[in-house]
Image 1 (cartoon, rainbow, N blue to C red):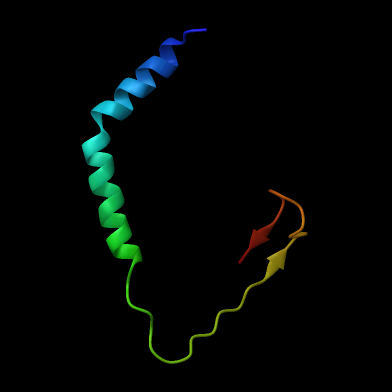
Image 2: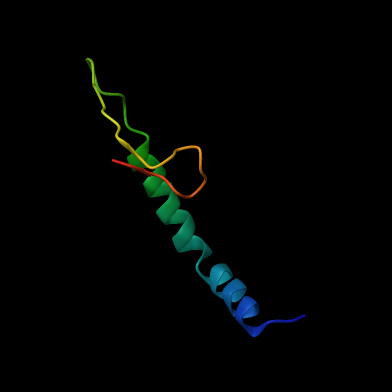
Length: 59
């Protein structure tokens, strides 16, 4: 079954591929930073049951 929406989305993704690649590359550079020196502590608080998919929140 052909879909106009799917066709247009694929065309849009093809048109924006260079901008998307540039954005993802810059994001990767920002995320790949050297680790912080010294000890760093993080506290996590679980709300809800973490065994259930899609029904948990972490602060």
